[in-house]
Length: 188
Image 1 (cartoon, rainbow, N blue to C red):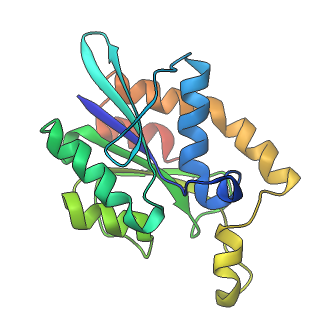
Image 2: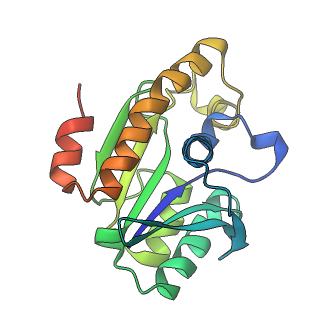
Image 3: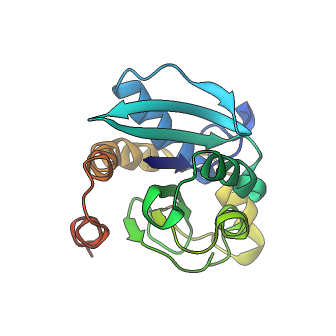
């Protein structure tokens, strides 16, 4: 079993913001693969698929970013998954240049409230798929930056990143070892 989660905030006003890249990548992947049986379950938009005899779930928590762990924890507990091997979370990272992808197999939250919430509910051992959104100009502009809309250049970068993210999700579904995933996608 695998649970692939995209983090973001629900609601039209947040739809195309930097903080919602996790939602964007999950939505685009589901659209590309004609996966449409999305339901509201586990405080989230949730869909169950079968891939080569294995269950693969996709989840977008509807709890708002700071409470993402409530939704993820419910699904993990219900399906009796091991977060260390079954949970993959896609989210924004301000400490990385825009468009860069980095995978980590565990660790702390690095100040990301969605990850902090997930850690509170399932522990630190789960795979993180970080997508760089770049830094705010100053600490005071942080909220405006993460909740801000994409520039035209950033929209192009997102489009260019889709295929890479789709390949990454396919590699996860095909049970690629985490160290191989990191070697393949964590390029400088």
